[in-house]
Length: 426
Image (tube, rainbow, N blue to C red):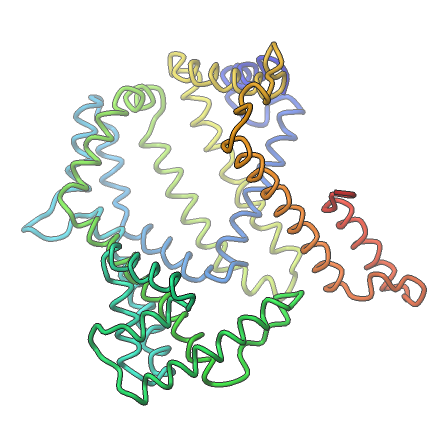
């Protein structure tokens, strides 16, 4: 982007009400953005491992959002009265019950917490020892000071943190048989950990080969599940705290001036209707793409691009209205961004010596230089690791003489990717 490029872009948007009337170079950027957004939507709601849960959360949020009442409130001409109406709509607690905002956020969190509890029950059943599971749970829910004490003790004794937790004197106490089981599991898992470090590719790891090492693996998984469950519970408690509503009110107070200007410049109620239509169309498109993907996979990609294209003008109209009627609302922000881009592109007028910034002598300089060298070496090793992993995954990457036509194509692809990743000589 050249000098004053951002200002020129918004100046063009300011005088162009329709996206189709933008100059050809702007149209090319819009097309790139359309494809990128369609790809992000597809990855989030269709291709990702948690796509089903994400879609369910979107449906729940969409179903709870009171669009009709919101549109009525957003048509109030007084910005202060409008914001007060929004606060009453989302934060009011009729008869001491949950507010709308609490129900919108906690409904998804409760579902996630329930799923985690089911996973915890399944892992606990595999472990087959309630006392061991309870010790892990108590550690996760313990205060940070107690957790830090266990970590320090494990580091001083050079044993795993899980071993320190299980053999602690805190109730429930383990009997002799349980303690021997923990000792055997700790030794077996230590051997498995050493073996795992020798693997060149993490995909070659099929897990421990004996049940004793699997005990520690399962307990480690259980600890992670308990930690995620605790985070969800703490977030739910935070939402139900009275200070949350006060915080939201303070945020509205801080951003009142720009919000009022945007409210006056654009028809927010109409834009909210456009958002409602987009989400409804998005859900219908996702639900219809599963059957279509089996018939024509290429058409699956196109329907998401068409989805974004259908609502592109509505989004552009909002930006155009804010920019054309916003009374230079974003001029200061654009000026600051352009200063940053200019600095990134052209640098300082005078060269800055890193030697002048760094300490000239002493242990502090040695520590800084050592840390820089360690970081550089770490990323160099990571490049080498990914390069080797790519070569192994494509297979026979170095066997050029014996490669058939398919392997030759794979070899060419690997060499191209590796060329991009490699540092060359260190």
